[in-house]
Length: 330
Image (cartoon, rainbow, N blue to C red; front, side, top):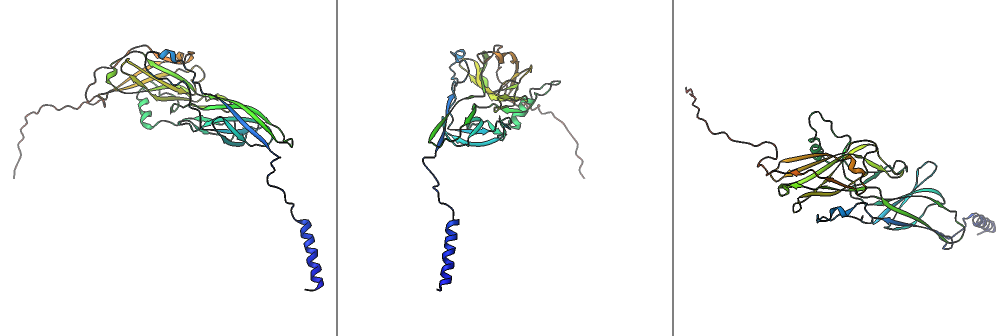
C-alpha cells in the first residue's frame, strides 16, 4: 500500500473520530427522582344499619378495595389529559415531568360502571349501560293510559367507584436523588340507600321481585365533581324475607336528579302462579333523609295465586254441543 493511500486513511480516521457520538450511560443511579402516590381509601358506605335490626338481613357497610387504580394527570390550563398510568390498591410509583397538574384517580375494575371521555377532566364520565329490552318493556307496562313514560333511559344501578382529586405540583429535579410523595384520599362517588317494605302479606307466594326508581342522575362527571342533569330510571332486584314478611334491599345511585323532580318507586312482584303485581309510591322526600333508609309502611297483600294467571290469559274449553249437518254425496 503506498504512502499516499496511508495518509488518506489516517486523515479519514481522525475525521470520523472527532465527529462520532459521545457515549453516555443510559441510566445513572445518582440522577433519580421518585414520585410515590399514597392513596388513603375511605371504603365506608354511608348507610344506617341499625334500622334493619331484627330483619336478619346483612347490609354491606364497606366497599371492597380495588386491586388497581388508574391515575390521570391533566393540564390546569386547558384540562387536557397529559399522562396516565396504573397503580396498586393503595398507590405506587408514578412518572411524569415537572409541572402543575390536576390529578384524578379512580378505582379500576368495577362490574357495572364504565368510563368515557378521559381526554378532558371536565368530560370524564362514569355511567352504566341501559337495561335489556325485556326490562324496559316491564317498566313501560307500569304506565297507565294518560300517563307519560318515565323520562330518560332505564339503566342498571351503579356499583361503587372510588375517586380522588388533587391539585399537585411536581418540582424540577435538583440534581440529587429524592422522593416526592403525593397523598390523596379516595372515596366513593355513588350513594347507597336501603329500601324496605315493612309489611307484606303473602310473601310465601312471591316468586321474584324487582324495583325501579325514576328521576335519578344518568351518570357522574367525577372529574369536575358533578352529577349529570340527564334523567334516568335505575332498576335492581329486591330480596324477600318470608319469615319476617317484608321486602328489603340496598340500591346504589349516582344521586337523585337535581331540582324539584319527583321520584317514583315502582315495585314489580311476580307470584308463584305467574301473575304480576305492581305498586307505585312517591319517595321524593325520602331521599332527603340522613339515614338513607327508604321505608314503605303501607301493607302489600299478595293473594293466593290463580293458576294460569301469568300471561293474563286463562284458556277454557266449552262443553261440546250437538250439531247436525247434511253432507251431499255425488
